Each structure stands twice: as C-alpha cells, then as structure tokens.
Image (cartoon, rainbow, N blue to C red; front, side, top):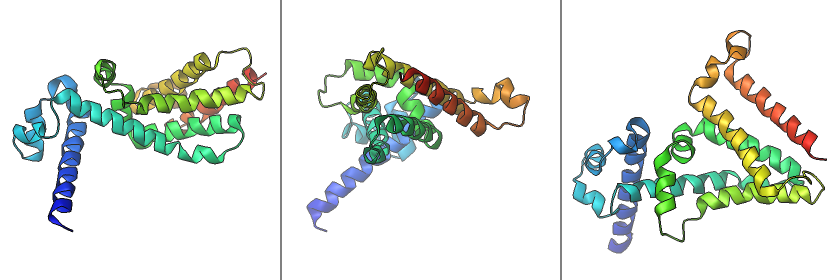
Amino acid sequence: MGVKERKERERVDMKQLILNSAHKLFVEKGFDKVSIRNIAEAIEYSPATIYLYFKDKDEVLHALHRDGFKFLVECFAPLAAIEHPFERLKEMGRIYIEFALKNPDTYKLLFVMEEPMRHVQNCRDAEWDEGDRAFEILTSTVAQCQQYNYFKDFQAESLSFVIWSAMHGLCTLRTSGHLGHVSAVRNSNLDIDQLMGYTFESFVSVLEKLRS
C-alpha cells in the first residue's frame, strides 16, 4: 500500500471512528446533550480533528442518518428474489422487524429521535435519498400488489403509510421496552417475541382481508 492509499485508509478509519462514537453518545445522552467536544473526548482527539471531517454536529448526525437508511435498504435486498408482490410485502415486514430488533440503537436514531429528521428537512444536499429509497421500496411493492387487484380501493402511498405506521409502532413498543408491560405478556405464558410474532401475523391477516 502506497502513501496515498494509506492516508486515504486512515482518513476513512478516522471518519468511521467519529461516527461510531457519536452514534453511541447520541443514543445514550440525546442529541442536544452531546457536543463536538464530547465526541472528541470519546475518541481521545481534539475537537479540531472532528472539524476536519464534519463542519458541525448536525452534519455528523446527518451522516449517521444517511448510513443507517443505506443499511436498511441493503437489508431489503433479498426481497428482489420474491416474485409475488404480496409475499414480498409480508417478507418486508419481517425484515423491518428483524432490523429493529437486531439494531435497536440505529432504529432509534432513524425513526424515534426527532433531531435527524429535523436536520434532513433543513439539509440542502440533493443527493440525500436513502430515506426516500426505503419508503419507495414499500410503495412500489404496494403498487405492484394493486396490479394483482389487491388493495384496489386504496391509494398506494396512503396505504403504505398505514403499513409503515403499524410496523413502526410495533417495533418502537418492543425496542423501548413498553411491550413487556402489555397484559397479554404479564398474564399469560407468552414472551415478548411471541407477542411480536402474533401481532405481526394478525396484521398480515388484516392485509389479506383488505386485498379484495
């Protein structure tokens, strides 16, 4: 590896170190309580080092938000092998739940914390499309279902918001710990994962009834 390649690798590694540390701090303390100095202290560098890579704290958060949605879209990649759109839609829900449960901190950053979306709305970077891409996968799948005469009485984008809202609510209840307080868990032999599974399957049943 030449000098140029080594320096580029060091630059990439440092940027990732900053993002990893910032991610942890934002989730643990909240965006407003974390400063550039806090991030610098976590990686044992000066704040000036952070500013070599990011102009401010918002840009750090924006990068984390972008990378998180890119990861989610990558998780959806196996859906391309499922031909029937309704089966693809069901599998998309399972993948979304799995993503939330395996990556709760990233899920919170993307879908629970207010600050990332606030920055994205104010951002003028026209190349930021990862979040839109994730939703487009859902809306295009619903639209393809309509080509099979499913959900024919619904507008594709509106129904997509309903589906996403249901999955988001279920995942947020699970990742926040609130699902464990539901009486169905406390007063029966169900564990939280079973309740998640039953709730998801019940929602799929509702979608099946709405198909015609």
